[in-house]
Image 1 (cartoon, helix red, strand yellow):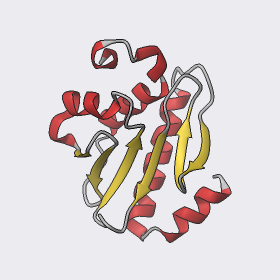
Image 2 (cartoon, helix red, strand yellow; image 1 turned 45 degrees about the horizontal axis):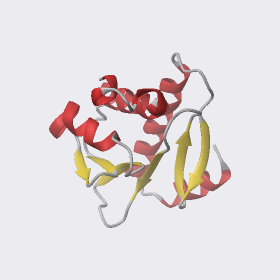
Image 3 (cartoon, one colour; image 1 turned 45 degrees about the vertical axis):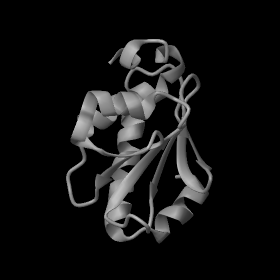
Length: 134
């Protein structure tokens, strides 16, 4: 784990730490499955961030303002959140055009998230397609 991400992770409450580790594992599993480039782990705006060549950045974070939820942030200038909302409706809560949120108390919707991560990792190849090809 990137040292800056490790530091950020340490300040999360235990349920958010568990959620972060599950999401991180899901990201790397998605990246290992049929992707052309390695997934880069870094920080952007102080948040754990993941990007792949040809993709758009995926940021993960828990916020004290919404302590019962974990967020996945996307570039607000992409079609990511609009597409996810169209395909997955009330599976997630939405924060404008930049984030999806889900409860720390609920199991992760893994298949939906893998699909979302796939879109983000291939965004520049898919952005011209309706619903990113989904």
